[in-house]
Length: 331
Length: 254
Image (cartoon, rainbow over all chains, first blue to last red; front, side):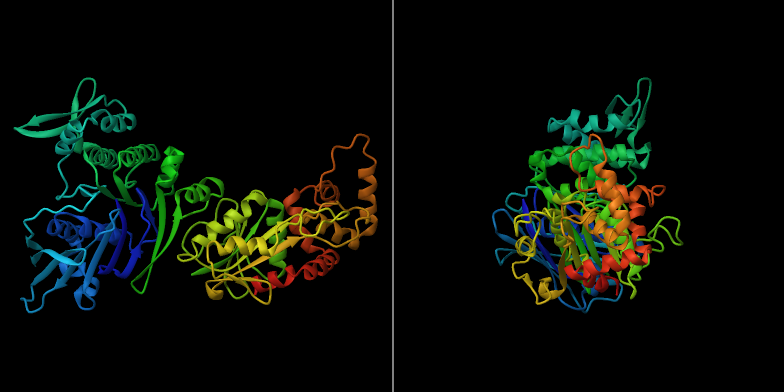
């Protein structure tokens, strides 16, 4: 489990650190407070495939035409970028990113070096030319101790996400078909099952009704985000799941199901670190939690001041008191 | 972005603070239903909801009053708010409770919450927290100040029309009795005349005054509208100055 993350010079965070992370971490705060950057920093710092993680983060922000240089604080013109994560084993892993100078104007060249306990063990690079990327990553696949997998789960479809049928297959292989499907069928009236069918030889995940079926991708955004969340968590064999605003598009009933899926994953020793603006999601997590779940919960309220990350931390029982006893707006 | 917060025990305390803060110049426009701009957000863009009252002080600072649903919740709520001070700057925190001791048989230090109790709790959050010369607890080197206000009135226990227990109600009744002695005598007479009185309740005197005064508005209006009566205000002020509460409220409202 990841216990702390320290970031220097990544996107809007000039410097900041979160410590005492727990199996279920909820990040709240206003827009622009650094929540997404924390999630992305953890992905870059803890991923066994650093180049892939860096590329995923770059692609999340390319829609506005911004180049990969903006992954670095003030486009890499100031301090070097460093992300350090520490797990239960106490051995820090560090990813250092540098913007290389002297490349043609329409190109961005970012190199990265990975350190384990201050010893360099791998390096690679990312070259961006007009939003086309080429990366080289170390051949040695080196997961962090105690973090065999790390996934960033998006609520909306993105081209770097795993196809739903692959997630479903993995969930079934992990023996969690009923868990994953039950969450969806409970909020989607009439759906009795989920199955992989083929269309033109391609596997497509379908929602099965009594007398017909439809591709899952035709369902509403809320159903799709709930399906992806439940499948991603059910398919995960351990490690860390990073969830960016899982409540997006969801009705309160679906949010409650999302909370169940999240807690089920935490109980299987998957560390879940999520961002949210939703009191309904926080309340649903509390309502679905037992005392032992509360002990695994921590909530951080974030804010950025001149690029410096500030945080207030509440332990699970304090979150429960704040929401259920005094109805405090923790956002 | 910052705020000051008053944590009080219940709805009547909140109503009392409402009248008092407005008298001292605080403005609830936008935070109170049926006022222009309602519902105005707090400094962090969040709604002022769940029974909270909010004001702008005379200099424009944001002030929040929260009732905690009983004394047992006041300190935990203070701790919760202090734990969030890094990202929601807290200038001043007022912890407001009843003393609850008997006026007839006061046992010094035995009942109620004292500054040293609050300091002990606060030092678990900031070990460097300390009491300043004004009796406030300073957290983070004075960036946050914490004050304790205890409702009590030193009027003799034999005064007619006053409950025995040191509460908001006793202080209010003491001010009413001093302003209108004949009413106090009538209230006491009325209570004494009950054929089968229930167990003594510290609120029974205040409810009796209210019945003949603001019965049509409910008890919260009673505690707020006290501040519209010049004679009552004068008596409240003398008692609140004696306990140091008036000075704290003036600072909040400034």
